[in-house]
Image 1 (tube, rainbow, N blue to C red):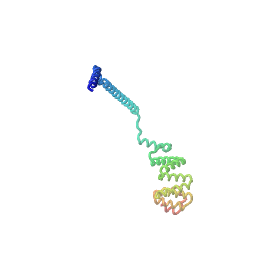
Image 2: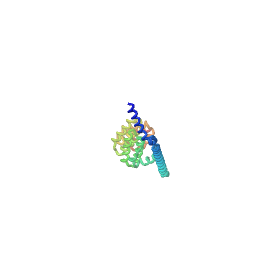
Image 3: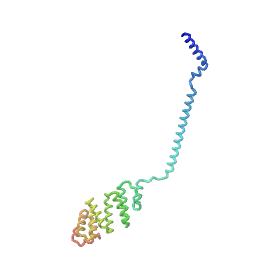
Image 4: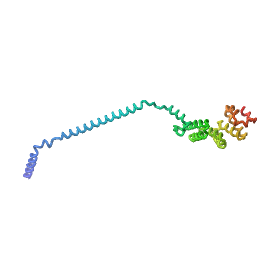
Length: 230
């Protein structure tokens, strides 16, 4: 056993002596490779910073030109926009885009009123109906629609509209007064006098109007009429 051990030791010693001249090379650390990686990382970081700086500069120049190009334009104030919508309402209501139902129905109502005053009854009726559709509680549009029906002798429609108004707002004198005029034209004196009495009781300012209203001419020979308007 000692012989074998001695032989093995000699073999190992001879093997080690064979690579002894290269010991420093084998055990040396790869310093150059590590330094190369560090240099590569540094170059990549530097290139990234340069790219970011270039992009930021380009964006600053671009937006600066945009601001310079828009500098001569004056912004439109909200009030001017609203005025434009009101001015256009009578001509092109279908192109309007109001911001609320109340605003929409008011624009449509005013447009219908202008058309009615201009004698364009068909256009006025369309606008009134659109206003009512946008806001069923718009009593002014509904009342004017009833008056428009009266002017076209569509009495049944007008009566339905004024009755609907009374159901919704029973303390409003206008539908009662309009019914008084309508029934007076039809020759229905009792109904006309009753509605006229209610209307003038609710709104005494209508007395002056009633004294000269041609629709109420058939009532002026009646004693009850004199009592109501005086």
